[in-house]
Length: 338
Image (cartoon, rainbow, N blue to C red; front, side, top):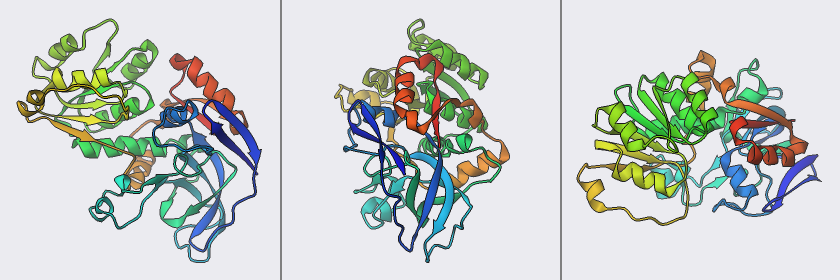
């Protein structure tokens, strides 16, 4: 079989590998589609703090079951499957308290171990989620990124009463926008790319802010009547933006949910957190959110078609990554097809 390997930063090759053997608790999945995520791009450029090399990347992947282990109870040959890429130990403090996504030894397919940019993958039964067979593969590949939207909604305790700011109108930011509007919140979204802000308008954003041309504090005052945002999602990974989100933009009793994972240090003032009883909340991966997202898809509550802007054959992954780098104004989600 063919597999796409990031050998070292900036070097992608297509190699031949043996089709993996499966254990009694695994299925063999024939991969049909896999998305390119910002973290995959970070691995490609050597800027992902969690990755090791060489690595078959890809954690947003779906496929069809072609072989089933003897002890597998939740899948059969021919099933269409979305794979939850999070692998946890099951016994550390985080796992015991129901937060396996931040397991002490968490592994993610495509980051810590080989992922979905290969024709066949052996997957444990507890990572399998049944998909409707009429869901197109390239749309099904967005279940994992939508699970991030579900996770951050949970972490931020998002409700229809919230006035929300989303920093970053990339695919995850736009997914959070869809989830927030689905729940009835009033939402502003900030970015520096006009085409993405136009897309955000089309998806129902109540205000779009290009921070190159409009002061975010002025926009906050206009949008919230000076109260500040109750809930802020920082999805840019830019520490200057996060600093602004803590110091200048939240309301009293507000929440700031941090998605980015820059390793850059930056100053914050304790008084900005204490005086408003501000909550700064981390969020990582997803915590068993796939079933919720698949129901959203079935019920038409979100619009995954709007996120998928480009497709490439998986053997042209190098071209796909290059296109993603060179045409950010044209790209939300690139899906590799098999």
